[in-house]
Each structure stands twice: as structure tokens, then as C-alpha cells.
Length: 110
Image (cartoon, rainbow, N blue to C red):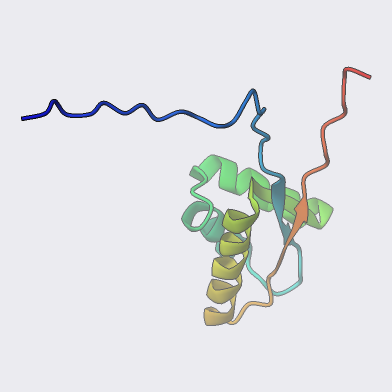
């Protein structure tokens, strides 16, 4: 009986640097109808923020008109935007949730 053949898997890539995916900010916008309690609840439920952090973000939205709920990859940000909009609609709130790309980091080695 012949001996089993050994095989070696080789990686065809040669010193390719992996790039981090572009990150996206999910933004909550203030309005005159969505309650602060609902915004804090969304931050705790959808974005998994601890109560104190959810409250701080909600107050930032209330006072400055906009606040960052979190920073995620595009797909995750998109999913969180859709989930938040769905909950707002179910609770009859006009909460506006958007996403924008995180600014590209400055290249330090110029």
C-alpha cells in the first residue's frame, strides 16, 4: 500500500498589507417630537450602550442637534440605521438616523 501523499498549502500572497475597512458614523438627529427616553432606549437596545453612556449621547443630541451613536463598518452601520428607523416608525417617532464615512486618518509619513 503506497504511503499517503503529503501536501502543503501555500499562500500566494506576498507581503500584502491588510487594510482596515472604511468606518462609518451612525448619527442621531434631534427633533421636537421624539422623546429623550426613546432615544436613550434605542442607544441601549440597538447600539448596546450602557445606560450612562446612552444618556450622555442622548443629551448631546438634544443640546447640539446631532450625536454619534457609534462607529462601525458600512454593513453594520447600515443595519443599525435600518433597525433604528424601523423602531422609530413602530413607535411613531420621526427620529432621523443617518450615516457618514469616518474621516480618513491623516498620513503621518509624508
